[in-house]
Amino acid sequence: MGDRVLVTGASGFVGSAVARALARRGDEVRVLVRPTSPRTNIEGENFEIAEGDMRDRRSMIEAMDGVRHVFHVAADYRLWARDPEEIVRNNLEGTRAVMEAARDTGVEKIVYTSSVAALKPAHGAAVDETSRHSIETVIGAYKKSKLVAERLVEKMVGEGLPAVIVAPSTPIGPRDVKPTPTGRIIVQAANGGMPAFVDTGLNLVHVDDVAEGHLLALARGRIGENYILGGEDVRLKDMLAVIAPLVGRQPPRVQLPRAPLYPLAYGAEFAARFTGREPMLTVDALAMSRYHMFFSSKKAQDELGYRARPYERAIEDAIRWFRGARYIR
Image (cartoon, rainbow, N blue to C red; front, side, top):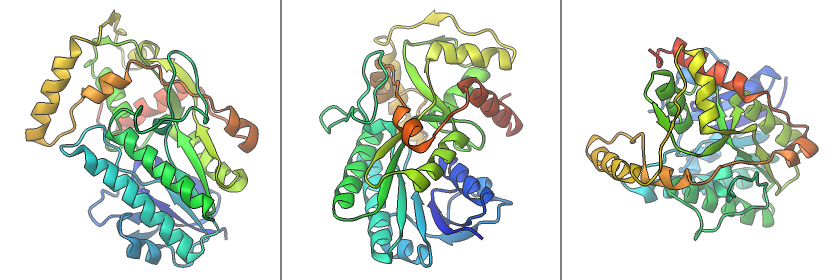
């Protein structure tokens, strides 16, 4: 038998991929899930379930009983909320509770899932782990939440916490149940709901490659270091051009300026305050789209042996899963 490990966020997109990768190599996987969380992503898997909340230190201590390693993947991943500071509180206090519990229970090594959201993009150039945001430069509540949580982990590492930080770029692929903001773009495009695009770019990576990167970080990552787990830098226009033929559509060819979209974003956010549903277009997302969010995984490749498959295969797997789950008409 392998090691006993705890994965937080295992009912989610990246967390379920990490838990499955650990189980495949023979580890005893315990997963932390909230009592109200959907369990689609963990059904049929031989996971030990610990019910609790990442923000509750007591339940985290109980979940870590007898555990050798912890993967803290859980996060409040929303780009909009009625109270934006709720996202910041959830991710900061959740990370604090998990890290303190791991320290107090003597966990041997922690892999903390941060995000490239905590890194500062550059116009048209791929940046690495040294391109750091500050509270003054970060855009939006989610990015702010990942920034302050990452800084907390770094501070605790300085006090002796045995944690490695990984920063996934933009994962896509199967089991994106919610779906994530990028998954929503894929579904929207596949269903013919994106007739135009803005000039922006993302670093796309298969979620299962991100999961393997987590395992490599546990095995080879240096304590206190941050490793980008990315794939390929892709313009939104090119991403949509890959999606279109997979669903029998023509790719959009109209590029829109951002300025006229802001009133639509404000209107969508206003409506969302009544519906409670996260809008497809947000003011923060438009502001972030000014940047090509391109990132380099060279450090993870050199130190961890990390590799990622072509992004087209990730899109194909995402389309296949969304179609099977009836997200795509």
